[in-house]
Length: 143
Image (cartoon, rainbow, N blue to C red; front, side, top):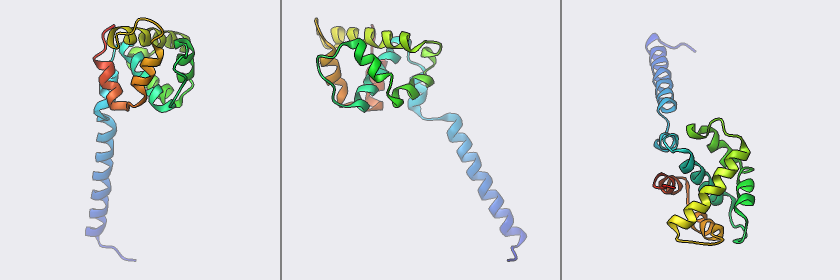
């Protein structure tokens, strides 16, 4: 098969432009990824609780916050997300679990006006969320 110099040049140019576009996409990432990196530790822990609930599905409403935190730390989506959030770098899973449980309690009391055994209400609120809405919830959270 004989190809002309012009055809080879077009093929190389097309490949080069595709490579540049892919590199730019990787370098700039998504807006959500940048927003996640701006979360403080408390917000990031609440974000993980939210996406964990959304991906785990229905759980008993009377579950202990510490048990819940342990459950979501076994969720691959949560583990993957936690590794990409700057404010959580250096925390052990135990510390992260404690942070998640603490911020779930705080969210329940401050945002849902719950005074006692609020985990069920928090789980119900997070169950229908997605990554974008979880990020919005966490970004607006002030413990």
